[in-house]
Amino acid sequence: MSNEMMDLASFGAGPTDGSFMEVCSPATGEPLLTSEGDAVGITLLGRDSEVYRKTQRAITDRRLSKKGSSNLTAERLESEANEILAKCPVSWVGMVYNGDSL
Image (cartoon, rainbow, N blue to C red; front, side):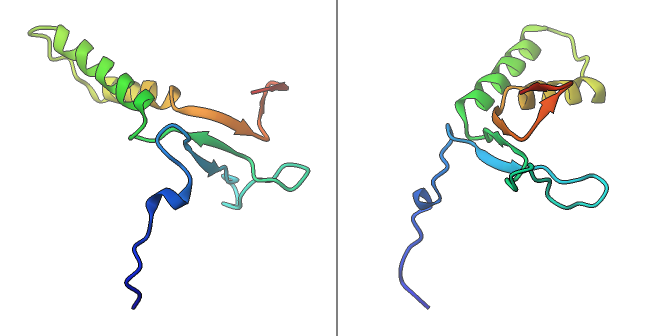
C-alpha cells in the first residue's frame, strides 16, 4: 500500500466551480448525448458553495422571523428545498426549453 496522500484539489472542482451531472433518459437510464456525442447535463453548485449556503441561511432567517408561527409542512419544506436547488445551476449543455437555448 502506498504512503502517498490524495490531494483533493487534484479533482479540480471547488465550491465555486460546481460539478457536472449527466442527464439520463428516464426510459432507459442511459446518459443522453448531443448530436455531436457530448454528454447532456448541468453543472451544479454543491452544498459547500456560498450560493447554496446563502440561500439556506435566507430560508432559515425567514423561518426565525415568524415568531410563534410553526407552519412547517412537508409541502413547505419541499418548496424551500427546490428554492435552494433553483439557485445552484451554473451552466447547461445540450438542453433547450420550448426551442430556446438555456
